Image 1: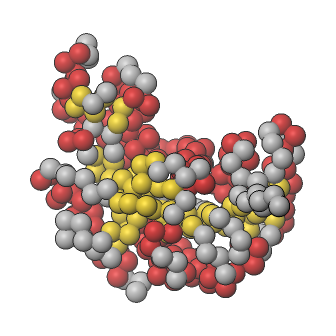
Image 2: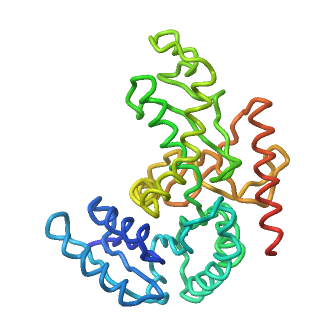
Image 3: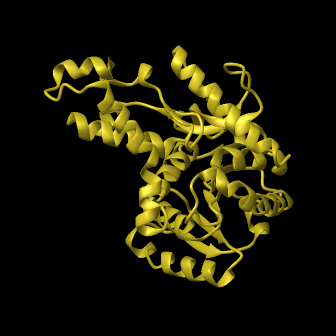
Length: 316
């Protein structure tokens, strides 16, 4: 008797610019066999599903359709992108109050569906909302993942590579903590080919001063605000970040990515979601890597945790 082939199924809740771009990115990646789109605006979900379905002849056989929460029961992954737009807001944390009711409604829908897979939260403020998804869905901590600083770190690596004249894929550097204004760069671990980044400058004609690196980090941190000011939303790079997380899970890669995860007793921080490098595979988060941060970085992590904890406690 032939073994039944497992079909990879992904649900996306919220089909605005980010959700639709993520669905399109997943489709052309050939990662999922089935993608179900859910949105309060059912006509929008049906329209996006139909449009993306017309890409299928150019890629590989897959099913993209609009559904309901009950259709998530057998999904491997559910991606949440539903959110109030960030236009005219000064900080991602300003979205908390407006997005909490959305998280409550989605959590109830996911829980009632019987979903037992892995939840990936993209909606901002990603750390706080991921924390509430963990609290309200009943899913185990290793199966609730925020996109965290995956994109921040990608922006950081891109800008460092551009400055140093090196392919950003060969630059290894993290931004950790909050996906937001209190995030921080991990300069102590940044490297090129195993050589500490600032030591590698000896081989570079730019001869950068520390202020140049500070400016690069600041540019990475505020990039989203510039993009939103220009076009109203960010969607392409966050869709690619989400795809990377899905690939690590569904392909069982045990890949390390700086996602937002449940922090348990790290530098005195517990019971909060923040970004740390995590090993991702079919289990979700297989392991959280607790880096040996230097004193300045440790203080930045603790300060970031304090900001997030105070914000979360306002809604508990």
